[in-house]
Image: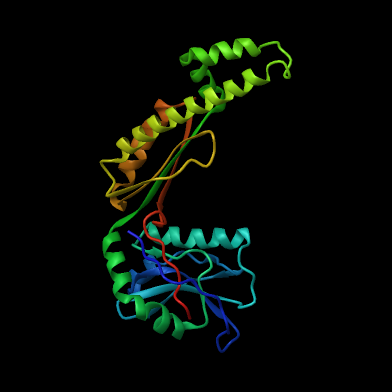
Length: 271
């Protein structure tokens, strides 16, 4: 499930010398219900603290804050502010998160050039997300533990280790290279098996699953699931049990509920 539009850059500012930064799209809401789904006032993209607000058109609303049009985007604090806001919303309501850097000129552009042309697509995506959020499970092997496993389980690795022990590096260069290849292959096999185990553990909760590619040689698993927010405690319990089983072997971290970046990618249309 993916929503893609064309990215934008600011060409001119609004009447008060400000532009509009867009965090995502939600169903428009009024009164206390609308206030409850908005994130708490805090740091926003562009610096300072603001209360994020809704810019509405029909059934949809964009979550926005004001931004100086000459503010250079990409600072770590801007990225953190963007993530904080969309994740706080995702914990309470369905949200189509925008990629970082979505800026339009003014509120009218939000209504007419962002929401208007994409209304049906946004509504369809929000319907698919109804009541759900992303939960991301990441596992990282503890290096000493996984190496012990490999050496204990793989006779070739053990022989190469013994061959290298106490020898000069130049003399054992080929053996060291061979040992590195054996270890990498063994860890890859473990990663595949452990990823499958995590996926099976999350299967009862997931409506959609995305397995992320490893980005570090010690990654054990990285799986995102789209699941009902109402099952948060059940997911936390399942991940907690897995963490106990893998204690001392794999460090497990659960993120969520967070915005469904693995399943919905939204960019601002030209404004």
